Length: 112
Length: 115
Image (cartoon, rainbow over all chains, first blue to last red; front, side):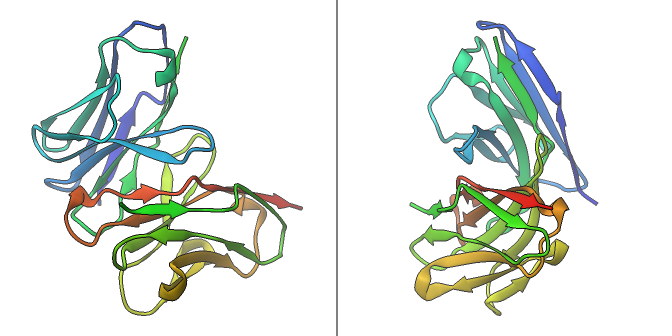
C-alpha cells in the first residue's frame, strides 16, 4: 500500500534562517506531488505541485521554493524565513488527474 | 477558475443529533468532489468522493454526501453524530482534465460536538 512520510512534525526557526521540509511517498510510481500551507480560518493554499522529476509549478509568489530531485521525493525550501512563513505545511500526492489526494501528517512551522 | 465555499465556519451539534455541512462550488463543468476531515495537528483524511454516477455517495465513519448539480452543492451529512466526529471538515473540488490535478479547498467547517 502507499504511504507518505513528512518530516519534521514540528519546527521552530529564527527569522532569516533557511528551511528544508522533506516529503517522500512509498508504494507508487510517478505520483503528482503537492505542497499546501494551512492558516487558521483560511483553508488550504496550494503552494507548489509537481507532475514529474524536476517539474515544479508555483501557485503563489512567495519566499519559498520546491524541488523534486527524485520521483517520490518533494522538498520545500527557503533561503531566509520570514515571520509570515509560519503555518502548517502539508505534503500530498495523487495518482493522476481526477483522483483524490492523500496527505502527510503535516509540519507545524513557527518562525520566531 | 474553480472555487469552493463552505458558508459555516463553526457548527455545534449535540451527540446523537443529525449533521449537515454545506459546500457550494464554482466550476465550468461537473468537477470531482471530495470531503476531507482533519483532527487537530494532523493531516487530512478522505471521507468520501464523487466522480460520477449515483449522486448520493457513502463514505467512511457513517458519512454520506449528495451532489446536486442544479444547486452546485455537495453537502455532507451524518444521521447521528458521535463525540469523536469533532474535527474540521473540508470540501474540495478537482479538475476532470489537466491542471496537474490541483484540488481547491474550502475554508473549512469546525465541528464541535456537545455531550
